[in-house]
Length: 354
Image (cartoon, rainbow, N blue to C red; front, side):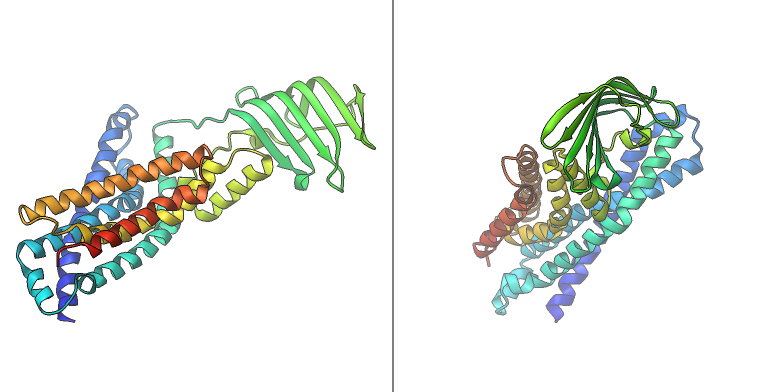
């Protein structure tokens, strides 16, 4: 019990200090990157301060892994350097048993980070971006290519090669209609369609009717009125990393139904669950890597831990790219780095100096 209190007290002192330091650095970096834009738009100091407040949860999310890594690596390296761990080992306490409180704390923080990301970081970061874009007069891009819209309970599907938001015009449009039994009943094709406020005015349209496995061409499409609003065709490509788990799930399901590529979005969705494990991994790595040398113990241990963490991010980037291009499954793209580094950390722990 004394060992646990001593270890936790040292860890949390370093962890909290490191978290506040990294948090301050990231907030200042974000501020100075956009400061010239704020000045150009005559944005008041109060509004700039409010934007910075909205950014704090996102900065905390970025800072947590760094702070946990620094806290665990520094504490263990300091204990090695001062030969305090030698006394611990001599008393019959193994390295795993001594560091178990840190591993449990990191596992709890990993779970907490997942809910923190989903319930705090996502909404506040969205407000930050919306407010910042409004202050800087940045207009979102609404034009879309390969726009697909499913409506009427899936019975009508719009597919347009291009949508021009300024002109409210669709180019190379296909409208597929299905009957109550989900069989294709007609396909309307037109070169372009312009929104007149109530419905789409078609240009060079041809209607193909399908009945009893026979296709007939009908140039009279006057009875067909397309009323799907133009807002439905505006770009719907969202960043899965910047939305909640539920919103990401709905977006992926939409792309799946529409027949659009969704492997990248699905891998990022799985990453939402795997990424918080980084807190547990960096502590596990710190335990296995600390004390690997008898000279410059503190510096070398910190460098080894930071290098291992960088390697984790590089490996994750590679696996996510492989998942994006469908060389591996989205699930593997998100979780392979976690599994690899947990195994690596266990091997390092088994071979660590005690």
